[in-house]
Length: 140
Image 1 (cartoon, one colour):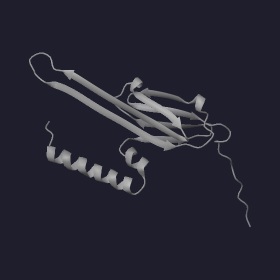
Image 2 (cartoon, helix red, strand yellow; image 1 turned 60 degrees about the vertical axis):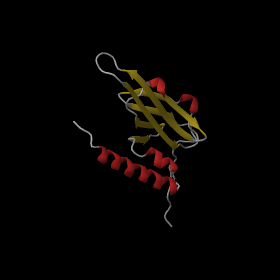
Image 3 (cartoon, helix red, strand yellow; image 1 turned 30 degrees about the horizontal axis):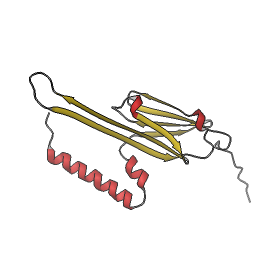
Image 4 (tube, helix red, strand yellow; image 1 turned 30 degrees about the vertical axis):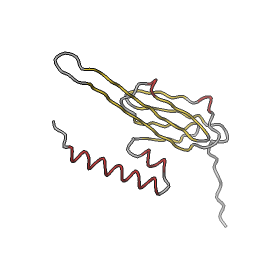
């Protein structure tokens, strides 16, 4: 199974150009967040965020709530010398970053995060201020 360097380089260039285009248009978070699967469920009592982040260990993942923004990031560096008959050096690197705005009223001290099978799941419990309120529409 071979890799075509020209195709890989063309794909990298197209992705990079799209990201730069989003940055210049002012949508910085969306530019960085593209390409990582993420699902947000807004339930009555909590917001649940599931983000694809394969290849990391739980201790490599950092989840923070800061100034009304949920930031999830991870970084993985690995280096290994070959053993046996082959000569060489193997290294791998991976980085994950997602950021999104969350409503005021999230109970920060009750946030829980878990990581299983390459998926990061964050539960953000809502306080009364963050819960939705039904607004009656009046006919006129």
